[in-house]
Amino acid sequence: MNNGSLCRDLATRSMQVNLYHEGDATKKVYENKDLVGYVLEHRWDIVAELAGMVTRFADAGCPLWSGTSTRFPRWCEIIGGILEHSGFKGFLGNLDDLEAATSDDTSDIIRLAQAASYDGKANIELPASALVGIACGIGVFRESVSRPAHNAAISLARQLARFKDEPIQVDENSKFTLRIREDSSTKKKLYKFEFDGDLPQPAEPDKWKPKSPSNGSGKFDEPGLDAHRIPI
Image: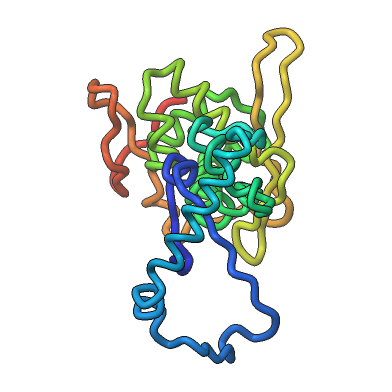
């Protein structure tokens, strides 16, 4: 994909293969202009190489990969074990790069920060439940906030945690850093969009009205420009 965007769920179900090239990739001259034809012509050689990797892995007693914990541990143990035993290191070492390159979470947190700013809550500490309300109204972090209220707050908190203390550019005039602090009395996390520079301004201030999640179904309507501000 070029400039692809995946939700967090799909990003954790995907693998990224990095192709290394020195110099200007646009000037790369490819010797083989028919990759599919080459693979078909050399199919048995390629299959033999793959079968040899599996055979060597089995003859060695199937040494399992012991890398980073993933959503699909058994598959990773076996595939990673086959690769490592054949000398291929770094299996799944680019998971963070994949998520950063394809996930739409960055776009979502920018919109969430903007909505908080438009609602007068920039640089103010908020509980996760308040951010769930804002997120529902503007249609971001859908996978997390479509859950029952308590679970939605927990899921959104997990999503936001990876952005902690990371400066994020909103536009040429403003950026923010998400600060997360635990309240000493309640032991609950508080979240603050700490803006640096000008606060972002909506293109049409009177039309930026997050929509209230009031359909009673546990799901949330699509955000509309003419909707009312949601209660926090």
